Structures are given as structure tokens and as C-alpha cells.
Length: 365
Image (cartoon, rainbow, N blue to C red; front, side, top):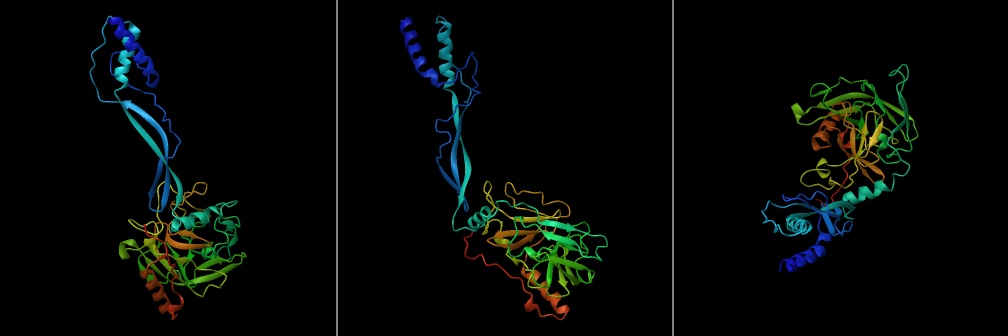
């Protein structure tokens, strides 16, 4: 009888042991080696996060110890190898299998703004780099002498409408690239509000020089007539608007703007940040480079001195101003400030309006 039981147990264990991890001893067994999923690497399905579609890829199935249990030990008159195998059979069944999957970005919904931006981005990155300027320097005698500036024609942004709205230099910048000016109309430049003094309508910067650069590397010089500074403490906004002494020529293209609520806005927006999916946003920084928040084009764009640098939505062939770095985006209040500066200098405000990009045709997520 004992022999029959032993032989039956032995046959059972021989059939099942190859499927179980080996364990030894009389206590609770810990299975430290993960068991591969036979279907590892297959795609069991997809998931979505707003406009982003992810492929679910099987990775591994892990065996972890189950809750503690008590087993009656096998009879002591059995051979040691049989007793050991019986204990293994009992304890190996007391495990929990945990299957892990990995979300891998696959594509964006074709009608989404994310899809448009991403497909345009990847079509124009070959051979491109992050340097905005080939040359940007203060010569001896600056600001009495104009700065030296040339575009880098291999830049990510080269050839895009609105690029010439980026000023390479102005008289109040301190270190090169700090407190940068971005033209939002032919008479108005944008920069940060904090660090620019009190919240005010004034002319502290009257006569200060601002330079822009055409796509043919010709410098355009203008000066400041008046400024409006808005601070978060007083106005609950953060920006400065400079009124130029003359209209910028046609060779300088002010950036169009987009409503900040339509880009990366919670809980709903047109352009959505999807963790694990690429969402390019162009961000210039004081060192003369532009980051895109995409692998291979990632930079530190949030350093002290980068405040007010423009954050831009890279639409096909065009840069659209979204917000400034740690500063406010375009708004009806900003337009009202621009209009006020115009009226103070006897200008017709209707000629200097923000140009809004219409994103109504894209779904909101």
C-alpha cells in the first residue's frame, strides 16, 4: 500500500514538477525567480488617453508568495526525495500570478491637433538641431553699436512663419538672451512681468533699443516708447508689453497667438499632454537654443533668466505663441493693455490687434 501510494505520488510529481519552480525546506516557500509569460511581447489590446492610442504589450508574469498556510508534513517513512517533492508540490501551489503589461505609444487619433503637430514635427527634424542663432553677440561698444546676429538655418524652427518675431537682443537684456522680446503685433513686444519693477503704465524704457532680424540676416532696429508691466501680485497676470516707436516692416512677422485654455489646459483642451506620448512644444532659452520636449531635442528651458521666453505650438509651417516661460499667455486683458499704449501715443488700436489662431475645428479632450 505504501509502495503504491509512493509510486503514484512520484508519477504525479514527475508530470507536474517541470511546470513549477523548485523550492526546498519545510517552511514557507518564496519564489524569487519570475516565470516568463509564454505570450510575452504579444499585443493583447490597445488603450487610449485622450487623443493618444497605446498598444498594450505583454511583458512578464511574476509569481509571488500567497498568504501563509500550514501543511501537514508527509509521512516520515517515505524516501527523502519523495518527501521533498511532495512539499514542493504543496507550497508551489500557494502563489499569486501577476501579469504586467507595458503601454507603448502607437499613434494619435488622426483628427486630433496632437496628430497634426506630431506628424508635422517628425517630417521636419532630419538634420535639424536646437541652436537658434549661428551668431549672437554684443560687439565692443554695444548698445551704441548694433549686436551681431545670424540665424542658424539648420534650427528646428528655421523657415517657420513667426520666427522673425524673436528678437536676438535688446538694450535691457542684461546677459545675452535674458528678458527676451517677442513681437506679437507690429508695434508690441512681449516679455516677462516679474523682475521688471512695479505694476504700472509707464515710460521707464523710453528710448531703449530693440533689434529684430529678417530671414536674410538684416538687423531691424526700433526703440521703446512706453511699457505696461503686469505682475501677479497686483494684476493676477505676469507680462510686460512694450510699445515700439515705429511699425516693424513686413520682413518681420509677429507671431499669431492661441488661447492658453486650448493647450495643455486641465481638465479639457485641444492640445493634450499624454504621459508616454510625444507632445512637442517649442521653448527658446537664454543660451540661444530651442527645446521641443521630445527625445533628442530636450533642453533645460526653465533656468533662472529664461522667464518670459516664448512657449510656441509648432503648427505646420508656423510658430504660434501660447504662453511665456512662467508668464501669462495672450488674453483680452493683454489686448486692452496694447490698446491703451496705442491711445497714449495717438495710434489707432485697431491696426495693432493680436492675431488669434482658430482651433475650433479640432476636438477637445
